[in-house]
Length: 388
View 1 (cartoon, rainbow, N blue to C red):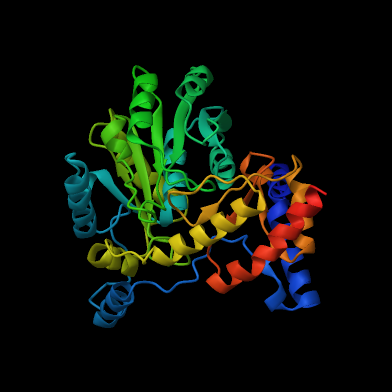
View 2 (cartoon, helix red, strand yellow):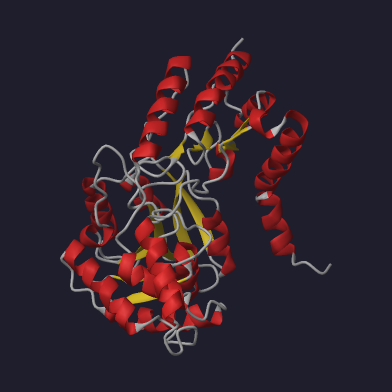
């Protein structure tokens, strides 16, 4: 067989995503696009901030010498210095350019650091429910995923994390604001995790592509401030609505023991994984416009409209504090069966089973407000069909 068995197995585990794409195409052809309400993809429908596109246009037009050529694999030193200075101001920690590695988005950042850290069989803990690609990122580098359940309100459970620790545990991935739940992990929980991990060599990989997308004035604690052994992965894909551009960075905490060796290793793995370096033009855009974000008010309004409607119908849903996702509880335990009921109403959602949490489903708010409003009757009919 020309395709590796491991990849064939991974495709099988991820096939529900492919089935949703195929089902969406079928429904749109059958019913017309206006009668299909697709809540599956986290692909921002808003445009990037004007400052971002203006910086991109000007930097590209400058066409400075070697502006499209190689640079150090960790990225332009000047860009890394600017980002380090912002991090130092935000956290109070002494970040400098040596702690920053520019990457091909947050996904590239995580693959870069996992490649640098993992030996075959090393364990990486993820908190359920979790972004399903984490499993594949870990397995990309011969690691073993260890799923750890969260509390009823989707917060990290320090006792369960402590119980899951073994001599092979190398890392714990935190994702706050969380995909799929929209939950933000509070400072007190991070402090409890610091206590649990103290004395171990477990490194927290804090994946934060949604850091800027928070609602109701919520503040996202700085993981590196609360947990000593932290490496942070940041992306502008969601906060600037540029998900196709793939630009981000790794920030290795100045407090991380062995941070210099990890920086050297990540610079190397960034190269040998084939990324080589982060996109040159977008590094300069990030340096100039990295603090610009989309207006989250529209997402917050859609969240409120949909949460209020689903709650009125009878769904159980934790009101998200950030991201642009909702993770309601299915009215029946079989989330796949309920997804099929929603499909009968033209409503497309992602089953919670794909995130390691059966009995739930994920909705993305990256659709027009009118789509949200017109879908509500379909949610109601599906709920009544599930509970006749």
